[in-house]
Amino acid sequence: MSEKDKRRGRGRGTIEEMPNGTFRPRLPGAGARLRPCATYEEAEDLLEAALVKIGQADATEPGGLTLRAWGVRYLDERELGGNRDVKTDRSRWRRHIDTAYFADWHVASIRTQDVREWGRELLRKKAAPGQGHKKTKDRKISHDTAQYSLNLLRCALEAAVEAGHLEANPARGVRLPQKKKARTHDPWTYLTPEEQTALITCEAIPLEGRCLIAFALGTGMRESEQWAQHLTDIDLARNMITVRYGSHGKPRKNGRINHIPILPLARWALDQWLPIVAARPNPHRLLFPLPSGARRQAKKAPAEWPEWLAAANLRPERRHDGRHVRWHDLRHTCASSLVAGWWGDPWTLEQVAAQLGHASRDSTERYAHLAPGALLAPAARLDLSRIYPAAGRREELTTRNHSAPPAGIGPATFGLGNRCSIH
Image 1 (tube, rainbow, N blue to C red):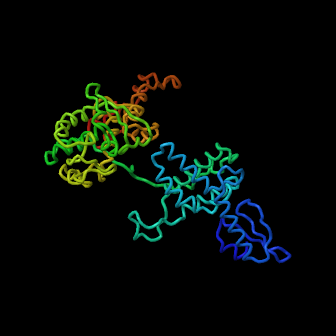
Image 2 (cartoon, rainbow, N blue to C red):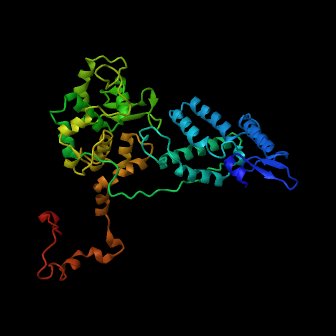
Image 3 (spheres, one colour):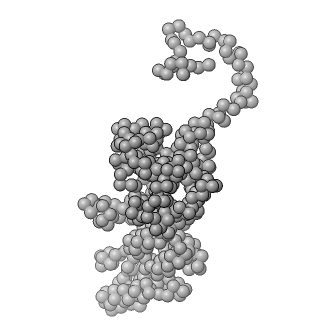
């Protein structure tokens, strides 16, 4: 590639100097060669005109569909299909896919190695200023942003395959290099039973605030779901809640309606709260409107939340794990309490997944370590004598000279006294 071609930028084609002194432009990727030109400038003008024409090609023209043109149609179809995140998808496409060096290639010319190289470039791409990062220099886009962009491209190309524009999806199977995050703690926290009691019974917190907290704890709903909950979807007679909305007028995160029982803590909150909200203006018929009757912000905790934590003496330095409690951690607390059996009989991970409305059990696996009973119960039922018969002759194992420790060595209790005695 000549120095001039390098200045043209990747994905803008190349211009080859022929032995007879003419210049022949070539479209990017596996594109065709165009007619020879007398000068480099003429070849450059011809190549630019061809790129513009390709970008404007009709989406139904066989072989004439570019990724940029297909992106417009694909995102329009997603919006018509009722996709809730199409605004985010459009922004992501504009910032990261329309700027790809193969954006103006025919979709059939894009190869797997092109998608893989573009993905690596994304991880090195600098983030645009704004969103709280105006003063951060040389900040790169996050790994999640790069992954979401790759997923969007993969889905768009898969749709192109289904529409007959491609034989195979070049983004299928492409994976971004993973950053291994070394952790010594979980990236979330939960309230222990003692901390829950301190929060719910703290008289310094107004009753209205304790109702909001108790309902979040007793349902495991996301804050955006809680603030979008309608009064008409509370069925006290059947003791059920229908969770329809993830925010105002929009479906939940996984697009499914969830029906959950009203657990005792949530029932207490409703018994206290419903008379209060009935006496307030409530034009939207919401369960938890602002005192004025207006909607709460979808993903924002009550403004008094830090004050309530301080009043209940739940500052990070006073908590069991030394971590700050977010409102979203009330959802984690609900799941943790059910799995651990703090509120009664332990729930299975499948039951907790249904309560929280997880699309799969994978999201619920994070709470498995809080369910020791789930492991101890089946472990106690194991019968080693089936593969080692001598293990069943307990009298032989206990009558040998192992009943007492050697002289000078006492039984190990690990500082727990008789609670750790071994039988």
